[in-house]
Amino acid sequence: MSSSSSKVIVVFGATGVQGTGLIEALSPNDDFSIIALSRNPSSSSSTYLSKLPHVQVVQVADNCMDEPSKVFQSLGLHKGGVYGVFSVQGYVDDATMIKQGKAIADASVGFGVKHIVYSSVDFAGMEDTGFSTFECKRTVENYIKSLPISYTILRPVQFMDIWLPNVEFQFKMGRTVWSKYTYYKNPNKKHQLISSKDIGKAGSLAFINGPNWNKGVVRLAGDELSVKEIQQVYKEVYGQPISFAPSVLAWTVKQFVPIVKQFAKFFEENGYNIPINEVKQQIPELEDFRTFLLRHKNKDRN
Image (cartoon, rainbow, N blue to C red):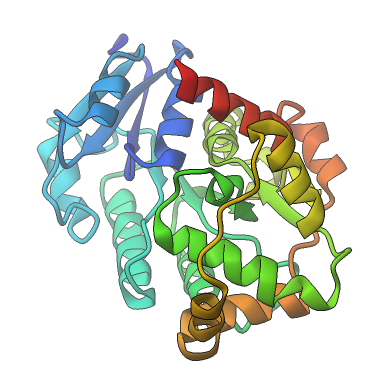
């Protein structure tokens, strides 16, 4: 950790892809000290984070996002001793995401935190996306905006990470539904993507630049490609086609699983519409899809 004059940042979801991306981007900055919350400090991801500059990995209870006030109390810091909080939740269900997002925001206000960065999702400019998993994030956004705390809302599009070779089956299913049963009516339609690493990078810039950066809302997209272009770039990088889930199973899931049905409807009827050139003027180093795949391919080799 660095000197007592540095700004302390507490990271909920530190060992996930977004939290790790934030810590990687922010840790070289001497102005910040980072507390990375981990349920398992001996895990490989926690061990990796602990070796980064200005980072302290702190063990927390499994329900740390349900009772974040206890987390703050356990840190040994006085009220007002935390400058910023990064808040990202893994999806369990809509109600849990709302509960945890609000709880972290309330605890941050109660502990005198100056700046909260919340990772949300882009709503494509719509007042109601019709997708409950998106709308629960809007609920948390609006709640944070109602509180006496400065904030930055990150609004990313779909993660590039779901296209990696060895993703969990649920993500393979998701990309199969999207590729084969949503944009099939319009094969030339562009689909916007963002690297999870770049979401973390944007979060670090929010802390560095302060809550006035981009008026507190940052839309994030790094590339836009058709289904065919995604498959083509992937094959050029990896030398083989993208692996999909069984088509019949994907069709069945799309028809009968509500969250997948909503997901497919959103992408078929709308999809994202972020002006990528404008985003890259603010964050020029955002990865395109090819750069993202090459980085992961090279990392897997090492």
